[in-house]
Image (cartoon, rainbow, N blue to C red; front, side):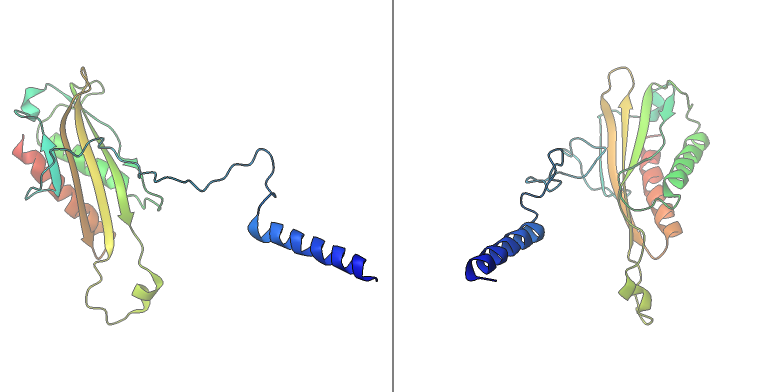
Length: 193
């Protein structure tokens, strides 16, 4: 092989290697880049956090002045949305059942076309332990599970938000997470029953 052939072969090899490593020029015409150049906020149920305050019952809440469940003849309860990428492990269903039980015990009339609509979503969750937490036998505190939800109540006719809250809990197991989150939400609802 002469010097010119070696130089051309070596140059082509370097160019092809760089294309494969960098991915430059190797996309098909219909392929799009999935890396965004701007921050996309995570999915949320609450559009505006303005005016929300900390309470003894839930982490953050706001309600329209004069809001009471007794001001409305009926309520529609929508199933919890999942805005998380982790497996649900039945938490959304348990939260639905817990809220349904509270509304029934409180004597609030539930209807498909209620005067107000209660909607909830799981917005953040950490439902599994990391590998290092699992093998740490003598760890004193294993309260490393996290569950955060948002609940919004709107008037059906005007689509006006009358109550919104964000509440979360940490715990050592999934059952305690669900119980603590529901206890906070229902104790806040008790204030406005």
